[in-house]
Length: 136
Image (cartoon, rainbow, N blue to C red; front, side, top):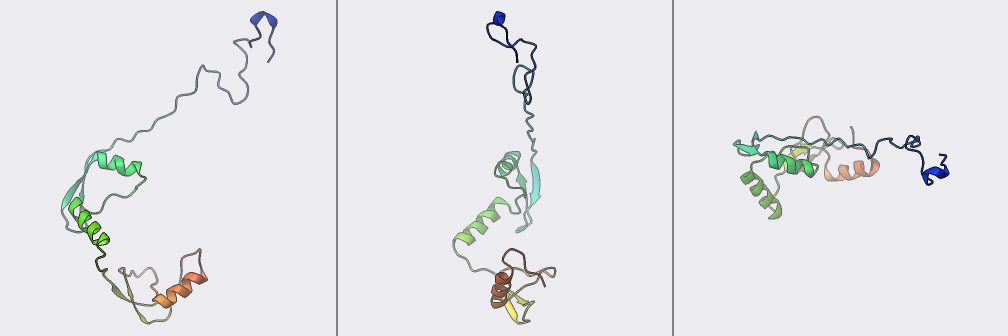
């Protein structure tokens, strides 16, 4: 930009601000997108009772990056937490290994859409494909 001695070395007011600069006086206002939450009633998967998922709780979940709604009421959550921390025995389920056909006991309820492996076969499958999930 050219300046002249009569303006004290400043660029003229009508000068182009240059590439990537805004000609307005200040930075453009950012769009602030606030989500408005409303209290919702959910059903507990453990006891079947209804419980309130308040707007404040929803905002807290969102601030922590949690995307799923709670599945249990407060009392069932407390019992589940106590069982986890107290080292309560897990429930195991019988399944047939998809690789060797032997019976395996697993700490989850098997589904038909995913293979289940015994401990030995799981170790083999896991080391064979470290970055991809095992498929049959």
